[in-house]
Image (cartoon, rainbow over all chains, first blue to last red; front, side):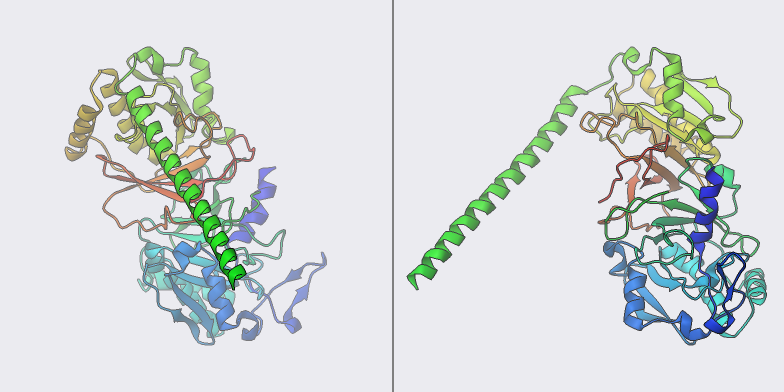
Length: 237
Length: 248
């Protein structure tokens, strides 16, 4: 029973997939859209001010107000606002999904996220790396391999203790499925057996997100919270 | 003009009354809280009789301990119960989790209910959490049952950490506290929130945005234990029913 609940949720949470531009978007036999490759870059971009606001909406204002804010431009993420509390907020796109995520290229995906300082130093560089490869026109397989190789070559930092992030934006679009969204926190740890946290068990509030599985030695544990960043109640499955 | 002046006077008078009322209410609330805290200090100045901390029904304590986590976790966990001489293993588990009902002496040392015998804090620790936290629970419980004061307990625990007799949290140390039957304090009873706790060694800069307005995260710096504890409020009790979430 719980597996049915967890699967779409897991797909949803990490999520960022990208869809394709209209000409390359595919509708499968089940009537659902699939995203076999990257859409046109424009579909992943958004107006700068809207992106700043969306990025900040990932965390309560008390945190995001003084955070550094990044926006995605044609040549990668750029700093739109210099912060002063060490948090970094950005809107991730589909290519930060797990390697096998069907929505990896879904251009509608928007994952507002605010990284705490340890995560900004040790997890965010992977976002930069993958985005750089996306904008260079690499395929999904090349991006995943490139991510893995970059870590192995020491171009990406080791995970710092205490790394976590907020994903509590009401405006997030994490998947085409269900409600498209979930208010949650993410905790990054060195690889642990998911059972060590009691993840993905019936009625457990902890889920293991395979975001970096097979690519980097990072486990991501997701804990849904009952509130959006603005303090209003959020439904929790 | 006079009408305007009269109206202004009326408004100002009304404002004054409102402000005075709010100030008075605020002061009364503060005083009530202070009195409540003083009451607790007066009420629980030292340890009560050991029997008051024990649960007569061993099975009830096992059930309460297990209620800290969803059954899918606690069913196969080791369960401890408190006896006259300390915690005893009541159920041998097989998933590495350990469920236990902590007593009031696991509260912060400055908590006025440090010796409140009604306090019941069911927790299910994951394997790294158990390896770190159980030695602390056993040590503190041993000291409490031996009749030391909380000041002496504080000094002994401090020395135990300084001498490295007690371990620091391992990577991934956490526990579930999702029992709807937990009893945190007289003023909240079992109306506390359902939450998870994560432990880290102090000394690392742990900026989690905890205790910020609208953040679902609380932070507690243990003392004398060199430990940082984050508490994440979750939306359900261990039985899957909806819980009130704590938010700043």
